[in-house]
Image (cartoon, rainbow, N blue to C red; front, top):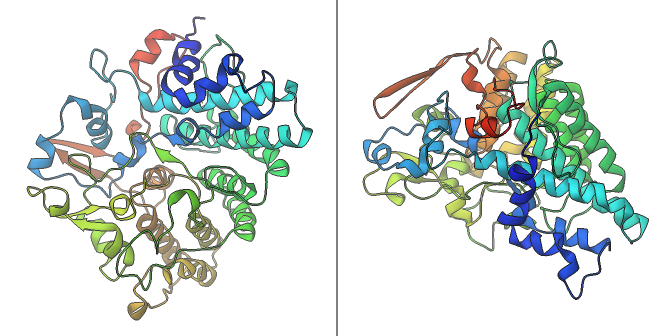
Length: 463
């Protein structure tokens, strides 16, 4: 079987991330000695290479409603993959276009290639056993997070009854020039994610200088997220507990009237963030790609919610010809949105675990731990639930409020699409074309670009 792994991934690390290249080709560096463990510290410190993740899922959420003619008409060919993912098209990267290559796929696999380089080469490097173990653990966490993103983007949602046969994504664990790109099953990919994270935990530090550097709470947070999307709510709650035992700080928005550099922490030191991951292409606060909030979402959010007051903005802030209200957290904070695991996510995983177990009171207790820091203090009233189903709906609604603008809302739509409480058919109209998204639609899976499959015939089409 033919494989262009070197072309797709390895060369991308060298070509696209010049900050990494200098440490990959270390023999040319006067102050760096080949085979020294410290070289891999520099490699894993390259945030532009290790922190960036896919943004496809951010555009597909039904909480977004791009319905102004002025905005729709301003998208050109350059934004083709944005509009195709937003409108749930069967083809996101058409052959023959200027964007036929999937930069999302390439970027995440470049991270994996970098991680594989560290994991495979560190054991033979010259350094202390403790340093090698910690750096290997960091690389394992980043690799696991990358595969968790890929499998929730390009494969069917996890289903315990079919995961052993559903095809996931290529599972590349060695940094070699050429290897086949056959897709591993969804189950095998998830098993590897869990294995990487559990293997990493003993050697990770308890604290982190910056949120891009994995610590124990980072790995626990990704494990909780992983099990949530496997619908294993017991283990998801267990690992959320482990993460929260190490980090449970929330930024208190309840008394703020505006955001500035003194009252809101930067992403790299934000105590809510367990592992910083930023989406490809950065912020979405400029025309035409700013995310307009749907009327349904605005009604759910409510004007007493500080996430409305501080993190959304009138359309006039984006363009004089736009209407409605837009996601603006990135503009308010001056920072790119975080896609990685966080303290709020752990709280809501705990809440969902209780709701799934039929304990509505404790579910609401965990929801309210977050809401008390998110609602205007004078207007705050603790939420209650009439029963387990009502509690579960309130938990999912809180996830919508907290994680808007990130991949988590789309991943939740995939995870919940066949549950009676959440199953629905979505409809959106873009440039006069109506698209529907039914619960069993294949459009819940982003297709692997035809360009990639032409280069690598063994790469099976999806879904």
